[in-house]
Image (cartoon, rainbow, N blue to C red; front, side):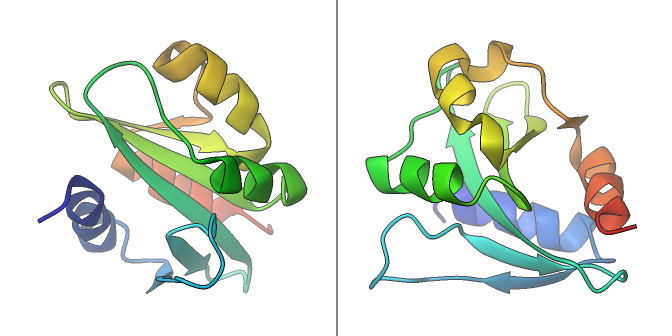
Length: 122
């Protein structure tokens, strides 16, 4: 199983208060991996990334998506090894690409990410 698919399985299993839709879009490059919907009737997107180092790699299309849609878009990164999960707002994609995992995350750990997603739109 691909690393990002494993991260999705963990997310789906641990953050059950959010309705998740996995987006597999071959016609529009850069579309995030997930569409989430919380109990406040709030939609948001999540790009999943897994890395073996502090560097996080993005395609030009992924960068363009988050630059064009800076609100209600997120990037969830799992660092292999320590297994740390960090959440970043999509508006910070250029900083995340430049600084890697040294950039301060808006949320740390799957449980905290779930609480962040639940609070959207309140």
